[in-house]
Length: 247
Image 1 (cartoon, helix red, strand yellow):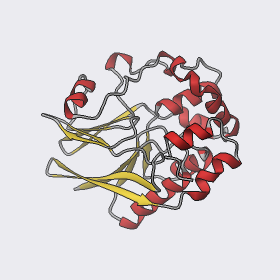
Image 2: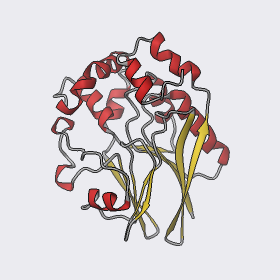
Image 3: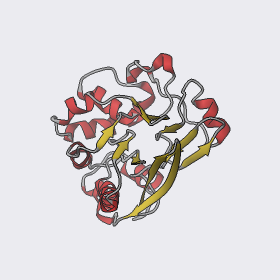
């Protein structure tokens, strides 16, 4: 039996991540944690989030579109046109990012394939067609978001083969069992209209995965106020769309 946690789309929300890691650590039965990208962007706590993740030996991370777009700015590379509307926000994050994290972020893969006994798992931020897996973020290699449904997931991940595909990017929960594959997105850990941080615990035993959806509660008051204190670009839009105007 193997048990692991899946979390995604932290988006610079340190108190939400801290609450989830506390939940996981208190269980004492989780073998590993998989973080599926977009650690950065939207929220202002970039350094705190990366410090928590990179300081642990039981966390594997992959990159998301925000991480890669921010890296492209930090490295002076071509920036994706699909993200041009958030370029000022990303530059704000780059200007405050501890430069020691840049080489660590560069080394992260875009996907991970893991097999437990004979059970195969793909961890990826969102669908990237196999022919585009090595393209630079400026080529906009991530597929367009589709509405959550079993049929849409099977069509979206048409060229991927795994018993379980874990992903993020689209912030709502996805949990669908197709003909040959289970599709799981536990939902954005850091962007929620309530002070709750979702994640998942998965137990693999006898070639079957048991998925347990979790939520960690936390006090988000100081975090939400920090958007104004720090003068985060596009803060009114972010607080409305990604945090439901909770203040």
